[in-house]
Length: 122
Image 1 (cartoon, rainbow, N blue to C red):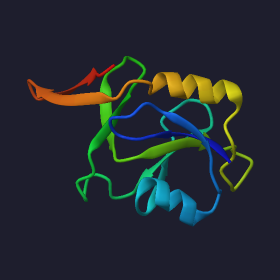
Image 2: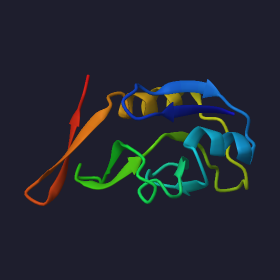
Image 3: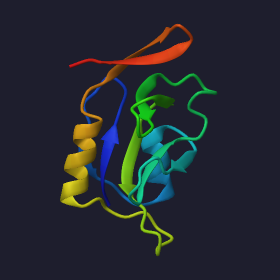
C-alpha cells in the first residue's frame, strides 16, 4: 500500500508499506487510530494514545476556516479509505502529491492567549 508518512520535524515521505496491522503499528509506534479529517475518503492513521504517552507534537489539523482544532502527536500516515471497502488502500499519485504538500513543513506549536498557534518550519 502506498502512503504518505509524516513524522515530527521531518518532511513527508511517500512509501510503500505492508498493509498489515503490525506494519501500521510500527509506523505510529503503538495502537493505531484512524481519523477522517478530510472531505475525501482519506484516513489519517495515528497512535491512539499519542497525547497520553507524550509523543511530540507533529502537525495541526485545521477546520475549513484554517483554525486549529487538534494537533496530531507522533508519526502518522495517510492512506485511502474507500467507503465501499473494509481495508485501507494506496493513495493515488494526485493524493500523494496533494497531502505531501499539505503537510510539507514541520510545525512548532505555541500557546498564545489561550489558543494554539502553529508556526511552519521550512
